[in-house]
Length: 321
Image (cartoon, rainbow, N blue to C red; front, side, top):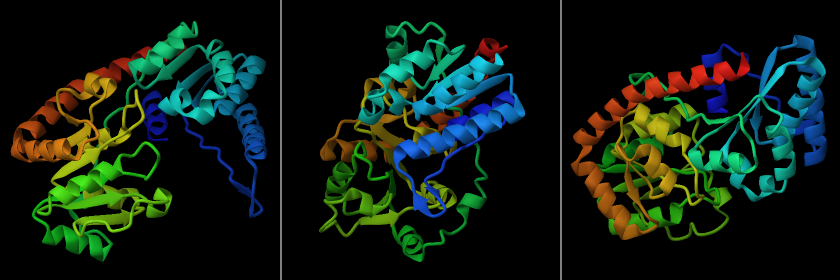
């Protein structure tokens, strides 16, 4: 949703998030949820009559709903497809719908060049990569203590706090981070995310691993601000992580997955590792040793990246004019 908000702001567009999990307290089956969301979407569109509409994908059903409105109203139509729409099994089942909508859109934006290759292979001509923009945060507010006293005390007690951006999703490599913690007793590893989502593997954690649980975004950023090194990994190929943009906004040294796509976009500023505890330990040590140099490289990267973002916004606008 963050890119949608950034995109909407840059384009001067109104952003609508239409999501219903329950009606009258009753959890809806997926098919009924999408039908309800589709109906509300059409109501809002016909009420406001926009001349151009951008649908976030997934879910692909939002794109089909917007396509219907645009066919009936003559409005222009764009799809902003996140990596999950290309790579997650549950959405790959609906590739047929995706292709149908994509070929009829005035523009398809996606988040990295590997996603773009898939669109091109389908014969989609109006397509471009739209990388994330870089957020800006109030750093003074992020210096305030965390509300969670256990986390705050652990931060104060540690000379080497390390944070892993994590959700306990299938593509999160938290198990390698736990193994690395065993090799680095001098550090404290803060692993975010709801532990219940891990299902297994969290028994007998090293004493220097702290599971933070789900954190509000502000608390999440406070922890990131106070940590020496940030870890951002994904086991899913051809994926660019939004968390890297947050990390760079705070100019923190970070280690990320050694993948072709992440190297393509962040070779200037990141340290990379495979899913290996010993290698990760080495990269963390390297990040600490070269902290000042890495921070300077991030600042240079962000200045250049402002130009990239503005150029992509202008290109996006030209498709919809």
